[in-house]
Image 1 (cartoon, rainbow, N blue to C red):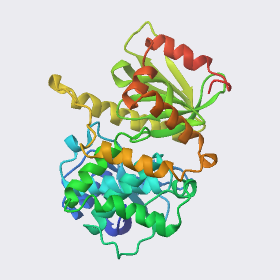
Image 2 (image 1 turned 30 degrees about the vertical axis):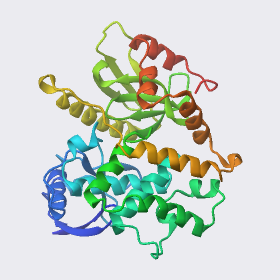
Image 3 (image 1 turned 45 degrees about the vertical axis):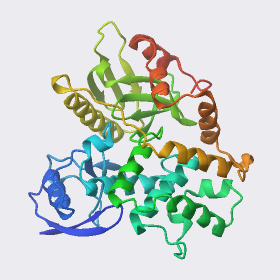
Image 4 (image 1 turned 90 degrees about the vertical axis):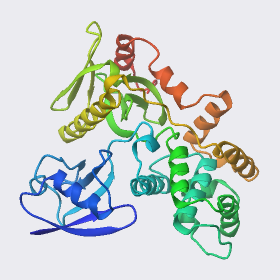
Amino acid sequence: MTDILIVTPERELTLKISSSTTGQDLLIMTLQQFGLEEVPVFGFEYEDVKGYYTFLKKDKKVLKQGIKHPLKLTLKAQFYPENVLAELHQSTAQRLLTMQVHNAIVSEELYAPAATAVQLAAYVLQVHHGDCDKEMEFNIMDYLPPRVIDQHSFSEDQWRTVLQRYWSELITMTQEQALADYLGVAQHLDMFGTTYFEVENKRGTKMYLGVNNQGMDIFDVRNKLIPKVGFPWREIRNISFDDKKFTIKMVDKNSLDFKFYAPRFKINKRILALCVGNHRLYVARRRGGQTVNPPLMPESAESSLQRIETDLSRVLDKSMMTDLDKITAEHHASGLNRVDIIRNAYASDANNRVIQFNEMDETEA
């Protein structure tokens, strides 16, 4: 038997596996530690012996997948739900996803506007500690991204007071409701549930490919929020790659193939696995003509967010705003939401979007 370390957003555990244990076997063993049945959302990310990060194949033996020693896997969401609360019913699964998203926001891997970051931090405080205790000391760096802290002229104590103010508004809220509201807000973030890869078109123009539960989107290298063009799963017929070249064939056979190039063969393998998994879940959710309802923002969240925005605007140092902050502010002022942004990326027919992608140069991307 071999020991393997499993890292989750809040704890670590060591499990024993045999030479015949598959990724699926290990996932079931791990989820059982949390009292969970199989959840299609989660998988294991690991670093391989060549230093690349990828997800464990569920149908392959764990010890045959080239995991770097000492053996360590990170349990995390691999395929995000379209409507989190409709698909993740158990609070333990919601907590795993909540803490993964929270850690990504605090580390600035996932962009959240300042007011949203404060609002989400209040929910996490409620999850961690229950009703607000104003005598309790806590490290603001555990709850807010450095970017947000640096952009506003609050001292550490003043930031703590701000967080306590909005945390105290959640008094009597159960942990289960705090988790649900957190995810209800977080899934409206522009980058939520998207995995990004550096790719190029045939001109050699560098850009980001974003893969998510709706399809595949192309982003400017300076802007991971607003896709230039996108290709929803409903338009995609076949996905394949040959070495570094990736080819997507459209349902519309009159359309050109969507082709891009990744820097490494390994990257294309990960892109393919992510595309196949997301496409399979997209189809499964609509099997039998079922309708997937878009997620709704929690009722109380909108008014709370407006008050936080007003509070923060008084102490904002605009010279510290990042490009993503400015882009977000522009779209907020124009009234554009995430649905509008995606609709614009999918606006023309597939063939025109492929042509647009192929012709992008450095000035456009």
